[in-house]
Length: 412
Image (tube, rainbow, N blue to C red):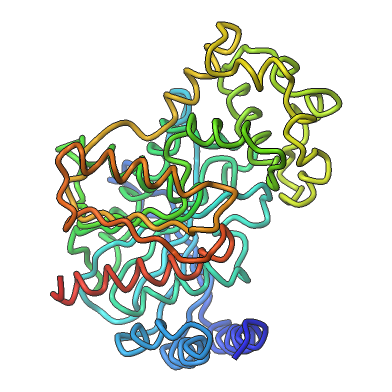
């Protein structure tokens, strides 16, 4: 079965669950008091077990690993948009995300998935109900998880602010605050409770976010959830290594990634003039092009893939040595994942043909973990042979969920 046919069957199942669940839409009353994080939950839709069974069976023809998950489906799911309280720059912000819960009473762990780079408000998890990846992730709640999909700041309920892209502090804050909001939300649900166990996974920006959140939780003995495992995929864990890779290329096919970083860091306080890093006409564009309406491909069309034309000669030759770029180096260092030794099972996955975020970033992090004292039986590096950045998304997601299910079912 080719991917196109799988997508047709996927959308057939999507239409089916819309008809089944449309009569069940309702708002969940906002609790009056006692919540530090959770504000409100709106039921977006439900997906019956029969539809999940059908979708996974169809997808198994394209992704055989799904058949293992299909055998573990226990229920249908209810999918909610939640809003919650967080902070940014010491100011209160109302943020949002998606929570999928099984429709069968029981005690469940949380699986938080951090999504990859996005520039469009319409593609946030709580907004894009047609997204194939989000839908599959939500369906995984049927195997015995409460699924948490944060929108990130700048999307969903907070789309009136800029997205602090690859900013460690605000990412950790908004994701952990959503986890606390999910905990409060579930406390108010009849028949559903938390085991207090937590699994983290993510891809690309989400892989970076997952490792940042893992490090922060492991360093915080007071965090109320028990982190069980973390699966980090294709993340730019060390931004200096990524920058070094990029400036050594003749062409880089995703220049908007680079523009997104600098747009974010300038809004976060970077004072290095943008025209000392990027050449015109690109320097002026970078300050205004991230409007929440333009896709990555649309942004790339406004830039150039030729590195010598995108960056200034001074930046290319002196970004890592010249005092003019000391503040840039500091921002890249501060927003890279800090050195730490994982305390829980950790899996790093990366496509061997990834030329957006090179595998060396993950390889370096794995080496750092092992040299710091982590056991190779606890920290795993899994190369995704022959897969590029886009091609690794589904295989990494499926491998993460299967790994977590093995732990939940006592196989590990």
